[in-house]
Length: 288
Image (tube, rainbow, N blue to C red; front, top):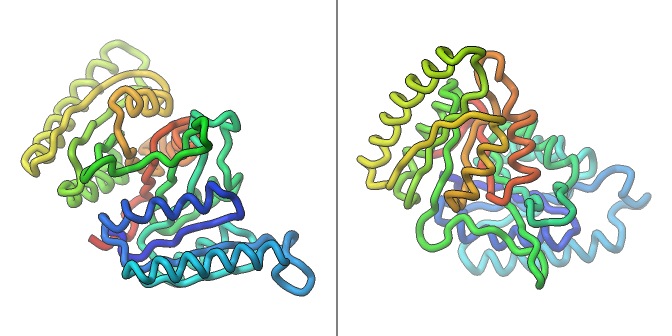
């Protein structure tokens, strides 16, 4: 599914921890890895890369050698410019299938994305799906939240049945052999009358029942929930309650919700949630 992956790195130890995500991605088809460390113009030395960055690059080269011994094709790019724009440019130029980036989760006292605004910008402008890894604060330091706890993943699939959400559903259905269970979620956040809410619930139940049966036919355990409230918080709550290892959702909604997911909802799920998030746009390129 994700043969070519761009891994976005900064100087932090958490960023380097993204290398621990590669075994999970290899289960999803990873063969070629592009390591990208974008250097902001204002931080670059007058004569090019500064000594700290050179040391970091040496670490990356060592990592490349280790990964190549494991059978991966690895390349390194160190562009100078606005990080998100450079990541987007290289993702398009190298025809990657996925961008891998990371953030701190609810367990962190910082409650901030460790790559700062770069993460939000990459999510907003990325031409391909983005996997946002999560880290929880532990006594011994920050620990990555694994996607595949054993051989298979458990996945939360929120939906509003928009075209983008339907695309995510079809994509996930095609990789059902990688899943142990799927939890479907529809959040009713519109409707001024009881009748409107009841109608929305009935329509959602019919569609979710169809989706559930499709996953069951693929040999995947599936169930669904219909609830009300702020979408972002409901997604976070359900992911925690069901102990899923991955959330897959669209970056865009429908109607008045268009753009909502990439705004308040996705931002909330990524910033405050404890679960890795796989974000798709509308009909994005995924090599299946």
